[in-house]
Image (cartoon, rainbow, N blue to C red):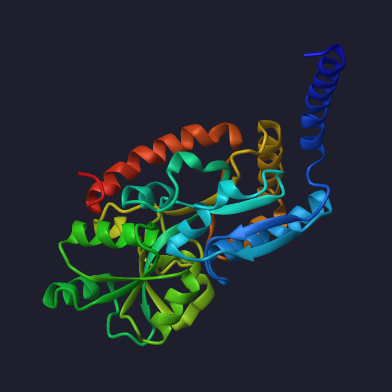
Length: 318
């Protein structure tokens, strides 16, 4: 290498080292593309739209929300690493989807391919029926399923998703058989329930908050009764050890530099503390969690280990 070329290479390296952290510190200096892997109207979409006012107040920028649906989120996640890695394209992620889908076969990505930068909320499981359903209680649901195995059709978002996990886990716990029917998002599953296309829905507390008197929640998967639904029992009250739901967070293309990943995470963790956002999330039936970039490896490791056991229940792991 000539002296001139060597000097040019050194100069380029110096600029990269100097500007990398600086660019991260300045993020964002324009609006951010936020890709939702599910249909409009579901929890992932609603959360993003609730985040935007806090994000705008903090940064002066907004979101360009796009939807890339299909395969229970896999259509989007399988393309994440092909997107521009400049920190301005973010994608919503759902757990345990990211663990369970690859267990089921080739879905275009592996769990370790996905660069998660933060996890910010949990939506607890809820077993829901139409308000006009003859099924009034959890006991009614179980009795009906035992009397007519497979006759209860249950809507849920995606296959090998949180809703699917809830259906399989619950059926196994109480010794019943129901028929799971996957849809492309919570909006679609709820529409199917309200239209009497299915007899029940494995959903989240958010559906109860949104639909109110249109639906009846039979039980929810929280440790204690939710303040929004004081009359709805928990599964634990009914002697069923079922606590959990779907976690949601953000991922970026693998090529995004470490410093920018940290900056993105820090900004969204600050949004998670915005009083307006907190109030809206609580009103909607969500539970906020604060898993920043530095805590993601431990969180994913723990949830991944738990998902192996879930995968066995689903028949994905031998």
